Image 1 (spheres, rainbow, N blue to C red):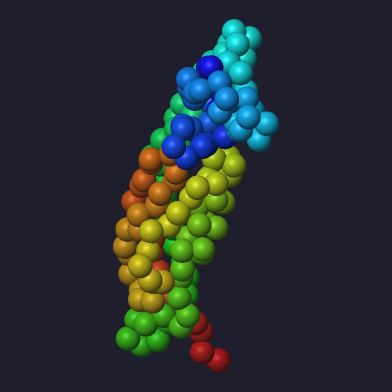
Image 2: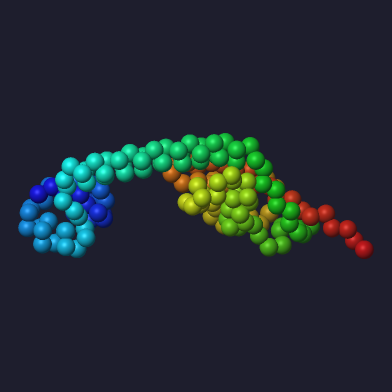
Length: 155
């Protein structure tokens, strides 16, 4: 019997795959547990439309993220921090701080659900460096980040 999987099923396939399984397995397990439905012409057409729409949406998101990556490469993220005499920073700048700045620059924050700033440890020294950022959907970009000392006036 041909069925359409409604969820990822270990050993069978992924969601919306069309599979041939034994009749008893489909009738007694997959269909009653909501893991599959019978693959008839109407449901196959519906699944194909859904897959086409999903692929189109993915293409649009990747295009927007590509444009955002180019914009982020040209953007310079400057953090003003208190620092000591030897350029050590009081506190640190972590991945969450950089994520917040990136989201402020982004036009559509919804595209950045999978945003990941790839840093081993927080930034604790003055200067400029490039931080790798994964925007999701296989798009990564090197973002210039600058830590500069706050000019404090003595009273």
